[in-house]
Image (tube, rainbow, N blue to C red; front, side, top):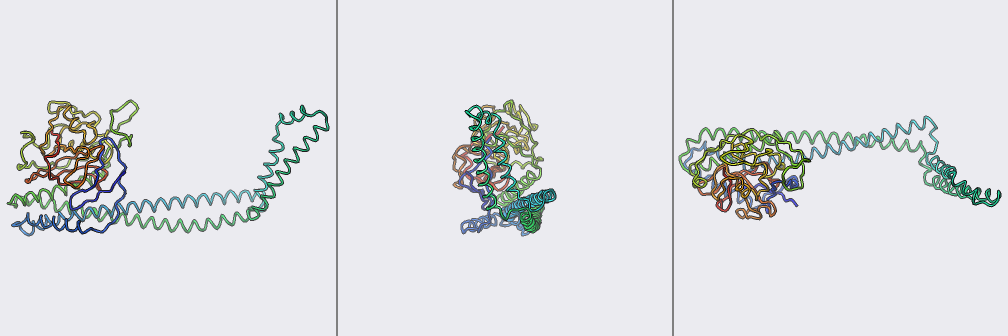
Length: 470
C-alpha cells in the first residue's frame, strides 16, 4: 500500500511514512493537481506571518530576499517539480502509444507484403481457407499411418472385409472434409485474397494517420515536458542566487530570531539543491531484491556500490544547539574518510558502501548524508527503526539529544508531531541539519512517500527520538 505525501508549508505530512531500511517500497503515484484547501491556505498565511515577525528590524532588501527564497522553497519549486513530473509522465505515455501504433502499422505492412507474394505465386482468387481445409483432409486420410492400415488387414477376415473397412474410413474422412469445406465456403466467402488485401490496405491507411497524429502528440508532450523542466531549473537557479545573496548578507542580521529564520530558509534551499544533484547524477544504489528486507550479502548477490553525490557544503555548527550530544563537542563535518570501516575508535559497519540500501529510501539518504559530512555510517544498519540498536552494537554513541549531523531514529509507528506516523513495520531515519533555538530540529530525509529525494521538515518534539552520533 502506498499513499501520496504532499508538501504543506515546508512540512512533509502523511498518515504513514514509507521508508524501509532494506525494503524498496513501490514509489507513490505521480502527484495530481489539486486545489489548495482552506487549512493549507491558512497554514501558509500563518507561516508567512510568523516569518515576517521574525524579520522585524531587518532591512527591507534583505527581508525581501528571505521571504522570496522561502516562497521559492515552500511554494514555487514544489509546484514546478509536480508540474515537471506530470508533464514527463504524459510525454512518456504519449511516446509509448505512438511506438505501439507504429509497430501495428509495420505488422500490417508486412502482412500486405506477404499476401502480395502469395497472390503473385497462385493468384488473387486462391482461397487460403479452402486450401487449409483440404490439407487437413489429406492429412486425415493419408495420415492414417501404416499401423492403422495393418490393423485393418489383421482385423479383416476376408479381402472384401478389408476393402469395406477402408471405404468406410474414406467415407468418414470425406464427410468430415466436405463439412469443413462447406463451413469454410459459408464463413469465408469474403475472405479471398483480393478482399483481404483491400482490407489490409484500408487498415494501413488508418494506422498511418493514427501514427502521424500520435507522433505529433508525443513530440508536443515532450516539448511541454522540456518547457516545464526549464521553468523548474529557472526557479532553482533563482533560489541558488537568492541563497548566495542571503549568505553574503547574514552578518547584517542582529536578532537571534532573524538569524534562525535566515538559516532555516537557506538550509531548505540547500536541501532542494541536493535533491537536484541526486536526480541529475543518478548515483543512488538500487537493491536487486526490491521486495525483501535488508539482509547480509550472500554469494549469489551482486552489489554495485554507487558513490555518494558530490559533497555539499556542511552546515555551520549552531552555537545555540540545546547542549552537545551527551557533552560532546565535535565539529561537523567529522573526520571519517568515505567508506571507513573503522573510525572514532569503533567498527563503523561500512562494508559495501550504500549499495545495500534501496533507491530513494530514508536509509539510503541517511547513509549518503552522513558520508557527505564525513561521519561514520554502516552498510547494514537495518530498517529505519533499527539504526539506534545497530549503532549501539557497533560502538556508536546513541542518546536522545539532537546534534547537527546525527541520524534521527523514528520508532515503528511513532507519531511525529501529530502530522504523520512512522511506518509500523520499518520506522524511519533522517539526518539532523540544524537544532533551532526553540529546541526543534530541521531534518533532511528520504522516502518514497515524499515528492523529492531528499525532502525536509521541522520536528518540534526533538527529545522524543533517538540520535546516532559517532
